[in-house]
Length: 448
Image (cartoon, rainbow, N blue to C red; front, side, top):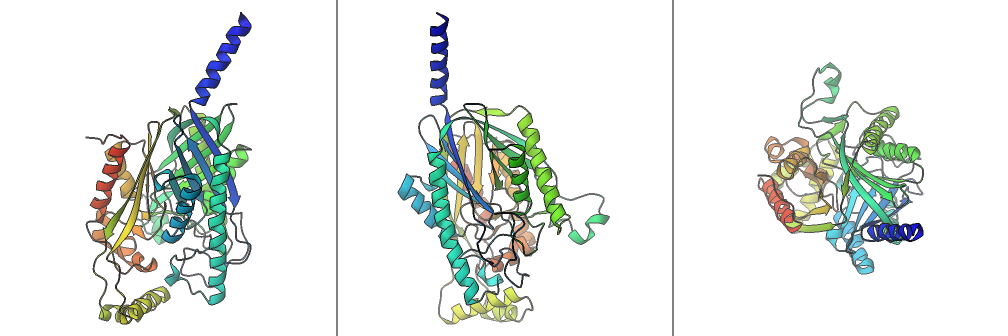
């Protein structure tokens, strides 16, 4: 009798696991094999010189009780440009039937990773040899990401998922706090959002399989010539060291106007990595919300209007600037204008929402500023996870406030990304309206 009860209990347990979540993970080193130009800073004058640690691409594949799948890919890169992201997602659709709604390609935005094809080339003084290396690396990277997702899907096994927000406070609003006078300041000005979103994946044996975590802060502690993942790279190293056999994946949040301050030393990058890792550990040690095995996904691409491009006279004036990347941008714009090229008047922008059980996740393309996170939490509650730098990094995505104020995030950064003009004032509201539509599609109620 006892044996039969034991057998029934085992069948019940295995049936419960079978109807629950499945998850698979994979990771691959994406450190360039040769010296290569590093992304993010216009001030660098030559290619990389070795590494502080390896760069990684990692994938977390999920499958719910109905067999619906999604894949989160995280990378130690500045950001996926549109052409590359489109090719990767098209190939994932052909091979595995995954739609754009089911795929998030997120980058940490490290400024110590490699330059990619079709990304910010006006700011880098690249010769033909450097361009060949960048193209070669980019093609290899695309193949690695496809293989990575295939491995994660092959690795699927029964798991439980949990979610919770933690907190750490090394992000500083860089628009409203001057780095040079930071030591004299007795208080810091926001806005900020200090949340550390965490997803815990535990397998049927009770072992920690994966930890996906995020933060909203530029990985710009370092500006040296050694490749690294900056503070997110060090955070992942710390977590995986503390949990052997576990895969730690970092996703970047709305870091557009948030910097790690003070900065510019390797010990500080390690410190911030440890601070973030400790924040994650605290969440893991406390009760986390279990997520029911129901996955919902929604995705949209909307046309965001650009303002009118500068006139020829304005471009000639910019061309006389002393900043090299501004001169390159203006010279290219003038050459294209003389060739009769029509500049784009809008940009196709990706927005996306997932719901894992009752855990909402929203991902945005571009360098999202922190006000979008704050607004999303007002609309959908404080538990929502907000990701920037996802699926396409085409420029900064300023709030209405920053668009009015201008400055780097609101205006001049468009030149860095090679766009012909600044965003139209209607852009923030267009984005919020689309997010509201996606929320309805996945059954997520908006706060009243």
